[in-house]
Amino acid sequence: MLGRQMDVPALQYFSNFSEEELISFSMRTTREWLTYLAENKAKKQIEDSLQRWVSNSLPQIEKDQVASDDVTLIPYIRKKVMLKYIPAFTSNLNQANASEKNGSDFTMILPLK
Image (cartoon, rainbow, N blue to C red; front, side, top):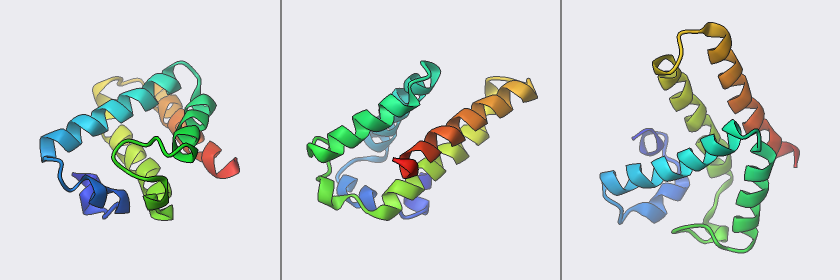
């Protein structure tokens, strides 16, 4: 798993998860992220995630356990995965570029908050 290879700090709090459980969890959170993107609600997703962090409602992790590396590595990993798999969904380069741009724009909103 790319998150473990890149040593994402938050993953230490998921050490009791099997590989399958971690993949399932990742798929749920990625599905949420992609749904917000598809509905053109990237800002809302960031606001909702921020609210979960502020209210200490993140799954499996306390808000003070989130490291700055988590905030930068997780979007980077999402982008890498998206770039790897986007050819499976479209051969149209304009559509692929637009999808990548939307994902990149999404990850840039957070630091500007």
